[in-house]
Image 1 (cartoon, rainbow, N blue to C red):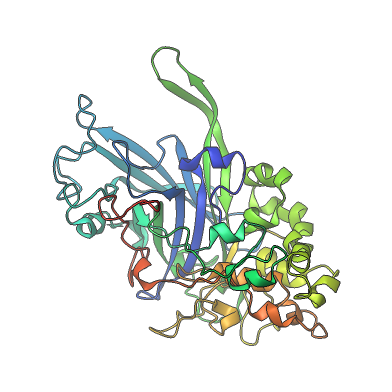
Image 2 (spheres, rainbow, N blue to C red):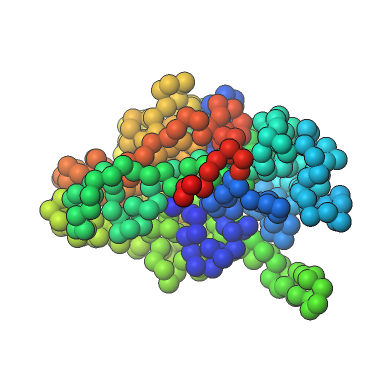
Length: 458
């Protein structure tokens, strides 16, 4: 999956697990960029009495590199605080929740947003309210109304939302991690599996989302409004992270926990599937602890991805040209680690310099695709407003990255190479469902309640 349970340590700490990062020019407000960071993977809609929430002991972070050095010049920090109205009941709510201030809601979360620019800290807002989780028609009868009340305006033209949203990432998880037995091609697999339709494993699950809409001029290095796609000032690098305090002391017999020391990064995410698929098992936890500007040490994993070597073995005779490709994958290094320089794709670039770093690179001067014109395959589908130019919520990143690893993008850096026919067809067999997304901020759809869905076994 994109970054759900991607490393051994963070898979045991879901409240700090950074599952997906998105960055795109806001389609309904093109003078702004929306950055979304998701946490808490695979939230089942049914649950309780303790429903999902952000961690009061986690610092959530959005990082922006606007001068191509791999390090953040701008960081947005989010700290949460939970308040319980009545500790003498086990109930999350004691009646219908009709507003985010409703006294029936017993366990609420609030948060502070701080902007750090070149070391200078500015608190943009304090005491902003999250919405509750979507429990069901008895408890949250008008859930979208509640979610709308949790969209807040802040200083500097910023807009923010933090709360539960429907999972936007779609993937046939069961097939992808069953030795890449992709259901559209399973008859060609070494295992010779029977034909079956792809299964959307994340369907009906939710995540906890931090969505931030920012005026473009607040993100450029010189405060300008980007208008030239070929200008370096139009490009930013984006990644998100989560940090915990260095030390934790547990008090015996009370359940109390005391935290102290500086903040230590425990999770991060730029490009989808980077730590999940590119970084090997022995380096995954270390990768999560490092800053993006230290990623040069992982470049060889990108240049020689393990999956590219496995595909010809798992699909005998299907990828003969890929099997012979032993040169370092400069195409993947550009897509994932440096951005694509001028001259590779006509009229496009999102290059942030030669310092390798896992970041989403967004050219803010490229306008969003019009209604009906956006293509889930993004740049390789002829839509430069999509992945790997940033990442929109509906972009089919699994298919794009599978095709890139399979060799479809290698001719961009070596025109003499002929990709295998399958490279342009490989996919996990899924596409975006419009019901998962909104046409407006915060763009991810309404989470499902436990009342309206059934467990898969039912």
